[in-house]
Structures are given as C-alpha cells and as structure tokens.
Image 1: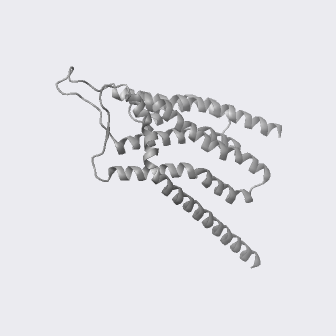
Image 2: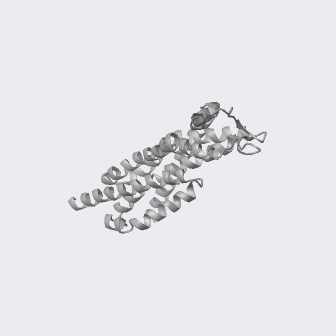
Image 3: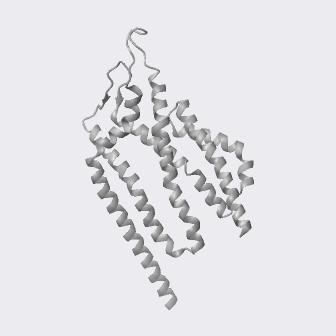
Length: 254
C-alpha cells in the first residue's frame, strides 16, 4: 500500500514538473514572439535578401505584392513565430534535458548530450544551405522562364507575393533542417542496437532512391532544389555510416 502511494506521489511530482517546464517554454516563446513581431519587417527583409540579390541586376523594377488586406499582417505574424521558435529552441531543448537528465545514468547523459548540441547545429547548417546557396540558384532558375515583349505579344514577368515567398523559404528551411537530422537518427538507432554499419551499407541503393523521392516531395518541382537536398542527404548518409562504425568500435572496446 505504501509502495503504491510512493509511486503515485512520484508520478504526480513528475507531471507537476513537466507542466512547470511546459509553462516556462510557452512563456519564453510568447515573450520572444512579441519581441520578434516588432522586428518582423527587418526579419522578413533578411529572408527576402536572396531574392533581392538575385534580381538586383535586372532592368525590370522589381517589387513584391500582396493581394489581400490582411496578407502582410499575417505574414509578419508568421515571420515572428518562425523567428521565435528558432530562438527559443535552445531553451526548449534545455528544459527537456533538465526534465529527462535526473532519470539517466552518467554514461547515458554523456551519450545523449552531444546529440542535443548536434541537432540544432545540423538544423542551422541546413537552413544556411537553403539561404546562401539553394534559394539564389532556384530563384534564378525560375526567373529564366520570364519573357519580354520582344519575344511574345505580352511579357511574362514575376511579381512575387509576400506570403507565397515566405511559405516557400520556410518550407525549404524546415525540409533541409529536418532532413539534416538523419545522422542523429541513425546514430541513435545504432546505439540501441536496431541497425549496424553493414545494414546501412547493404541498403545504400534503396536509400538513394528514397532520398531523391523525399527530395521531390519536400521541395518545389525544380531540379535545383531537389538535387540540392538529395546530394547533401547522400553525404550525410555516408557520414552516418562512419558514425555508426565509431559507435560499434566503442561498444567493442567497452
């Protein structure tokens, strides 16, 4: 009877702590969201810089448009939330770690801590690849389909919408950032014994097909973004095999 009461009390304490940490995360997120909203125009200008850079030498006077009265307002809200989530993610991960860590052994803590650091780092690398390489190339590719009045009776020109551009770049950043978690996922599966390096090597040809199929689903229908996601994922898969080999070697030495 006493054991049941102790277990119930321990369970309630864990729920209370979990609720406390969730509330902290929500409060941090809300405060940073409000701050980011005041700078949402600057953040959006930063996100639109690849487009501005790609069209700076055009003879056409470029602009971005919105076709609904509330469109820009909603876009700035999305920008603020996107930035707030990005800034708050280390805080959220820290709260998760503080909740989970007391129940782990020292060796388990040492094993998991690098993944908590590597996960946002890889997400950031994926986002940087989109911002500095993929988006400029993709924009120039899409702009190549414009035609002037000299070629056709009516010119075909791009007038990018504010919300559509944001949706595109956010979709690409999330697609690349999440896809870049592949080494972490495979390394964790190797640690718990679900996979090994030989298994990954044997499935390489199937993985290549799956990677490019996912790239086609997650990115716009153009070869630049699809190849831009597919090739880094293949490289990360090969690095994952090396990581799994290192994990296997450490297990043998232990």
